[in-house]
Image 1 (cartoon, one colour):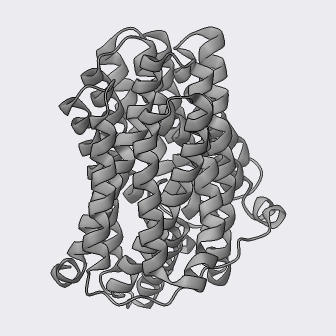
Image 2 (cartoon, rainbow, N blue to C red):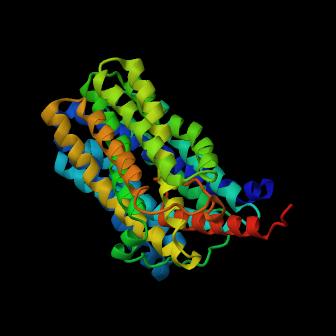
Length: 420
């Protein structure tokens, strides 16, 4: 692991700066939109646009890299992100913000694909699992630090938009000046969606529902905070709490998932998250209860992403896993596009507590569906299941495919170990 850090510290630093920039712009727009007088539904369209761009980037970036190479793609897209961040306060109009969010979602997906390709190339078979874990920690730290930076200036001015623009611009330097060689690049064509749904109905339906949950957390949590009159500091803490919960509970739930029927765990985790969201909906004006709800929802929902991928892998041959991950990411992206729009419409129609009501509905629906699926077919034995590998919803298709490969390699090593 020390060798990996020595070779990849510049890449990890660049990724950290990217995550800080991305985490800042998502929360900042939610606060600034309220200041500009945008409606909740208008802000939901703005937040949804990011995931539309991200989904498009996941499909188009591989071809861009093959044509012009990693370095040019990364530099061009990072420059695009910096420019859009500066344009947000200059042209404060919902339509322009929607276009900006599409562009910035596309660009962030592209720079993640590039950076994750380099990180994977810097890791070896022996330390790949540790590298994935370290990458996930860097992602989480970046998002949490981003919330703290919101407190350094007035969100009604330009400074808070300049800071992430500078951070993204600086992130280019350690990554492009890294001694890591440019890796070979290839991605797998996603599995046919009909085949994927037939193979793992719970995996497909669950990823669609979780797309809505993640998009609401990442995009609409700041909009909710602004709409109920939280201060900027309270909003920053509220948003960060989702990710702190995810970091704390990811590994305990992953440990459990390798030792029991994953459908049972999916059901329990989803219902706990849904129950916590109901607490938030009922006590939406009690700040400390909102923090409790955010911690539990984040801690339950983020591991569900990896759980659903691992569950789907349990019914696949190794050669189909990468293709299935591409299909799952596409389904998740569709849910992420629709999630903020539905959340914004419900918040505008029924009040700000609609934010938690949507999360509760999606998580309870997932838990209920997991319970029903347990009546439809038997679970594979724990010995025959694939290993759980944590991966965050913010990751690109590259990171998910790497996680798939690591899970299979881990399972193979366990099978080859002598029985005692």
